[in-house]
Length: 108
Image (cartoon, rainbow, N blue to C red; front, side, top):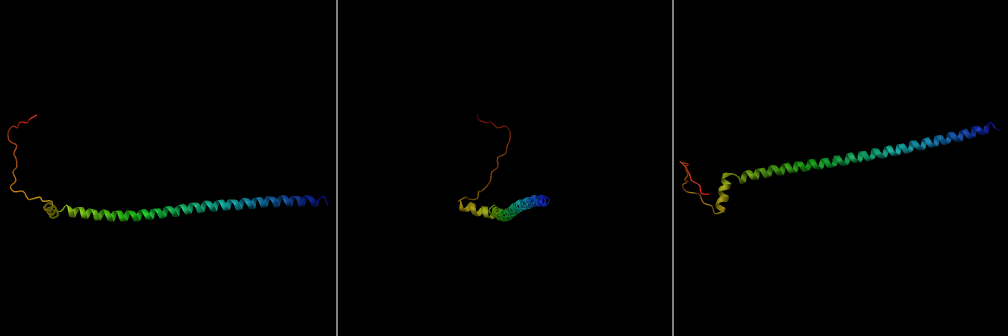
């Protein structure tokens, strides 16, 4: 009977070892899965933010183009003439240009 008892003890020790190994495998799989999910969630979140920023960039480019067209229209000679008339400005008559001839004196 002494021969049987050591085998039972060895079986219990090997069962503990197997149980511990199984537990370690399960814990490592859980940790690995959690890390994978966190990384995947981060990538999806950043992709969503990137898509939103690209859409915002498209909107800003369209708005910029519209503003450039409006600025060009406001700076056109015909529009400037209309604005000048609205402000009460009148066309000048004869333009006289001063010529620089000889010496000039300046007052200090």
